[in-house]
Image (tube, rainbow, N blue to C red):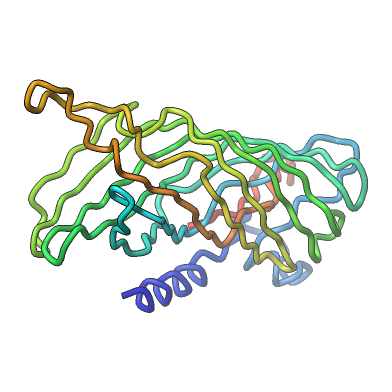
Length: 260
């Protein structure tokens, strides 16, 4: 199963290559073909704030899950939708810069308590990263980046499968089942013409150990009290592509690169 998930992840990564959408009539023969495939890199603006596409591409999530200290079987979770965002960059030099922004992520885990029961849990988050970049920031041939992020858990969703059949599902806005704030650290790199890889690790548990969903034998029922789940994910790619508005023949047009 893990091999199949990994294969699907690699295929989706190839499909996630950004396509440049430009106004009709532009002389594309004068453009570098890589810009049409990967989009244009947004760097090279020292001592000036500039905007780039941000957010994560396809995510492959992993988790270390334990129930009362015993390992709980889980499988990697792959998702493409919806991981988007925007970066605000400030390069102090051609080799060092800072960035922040706003990102929307779809993170979660899949556990198999036994051969018949499977639970899929995910949460949409809105996060604000703060990081630094070091390397070739002018041309984007290669640079590394790292930092931290605070995510706000917005929507929680859970699905229950018994013997492969979906039996139950629900979602909650600003659910108490997970922590409201989910801090994390990340690191990654970007190479020309547009490949990037990022690893992100969450510092707190995926579940809220104090959550209670009723009473059991006269005592509050705390379903996640002894359940631990530490998460991290790998994504290709965290983007620094150019968001470019330009004036052409008296009309405004937009050059956009999009991660699917």
